[in-house]
Amino acid sequence: MTSNKSFKSRVRARMAKTGESYSAARRHLVPADEAATADSRTASAPEERAASVPGEPQAGGDVMISDDTVAARTGRSHDEWFALLDEWGAATRPHTEIARWLVEEHGVGGWWAQSVTVAYERARGLRAPGQSRGGDFSVSASKTIDVPAERVTEAFTDEDLRARWLPDAPFEIRTSRPGKSVTANWEGRAAVTVGLVAKGEGKTQLAVQHAKLPDAGSAAELKAYWRERVAVLKKLLEG
Image (cartoon, rainbow, N blue to C red):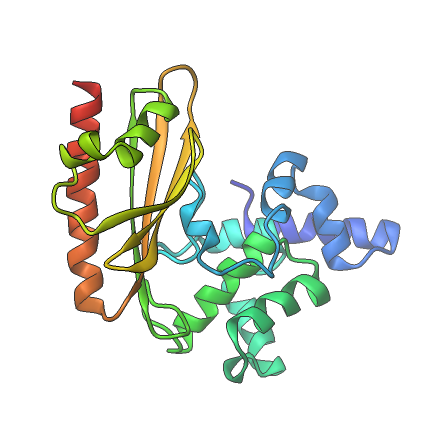
């Protein structure tokens, strides 16, 4: 991993040579495939979107991304962004406005703007881990399963198969994209999102996000529940 200090030196050297802004110079130095991954997620998307993408660090989850990684992707460390956001008055602004400002004024990729915004809101006591600015909570669970993604989809959409690993759950399918995603109601609320990514032939990375939970206690219970259930699902499908 490129260090914060050396990466900044490279960016500033390019700025001196080309006259580009910091953000423009940074984008040329971040590897193209990594930049494309971050920039493909816009700041206008819901803040929870990143947590439903298997394989991505979860901006809405409990893991804080390292300063070196943030600096390499955005041009500043957490503390540097926090100071800039304080000066702008971000503590009194809504989540979407903060993320959009990072994108439009500083050239930060959409997904990383979400990540910095969530980290800032936690640091300033505006939200707890797993909590949205609206006050509700979300949890997630993930697992790599050695079966094709279409088969994992069936485990959610086929009622008989679902009953074998998710019995008596208040789970009601809303939408399904075989091999890609499932959304569902939970106790009548549109709360569960399932993301699937094929990992080579016959292997799937599964991520389940359960949102709109009323409090931290409910979130803790559902987090443990989904971790247990996806482990049972893996055993069922691979068995």
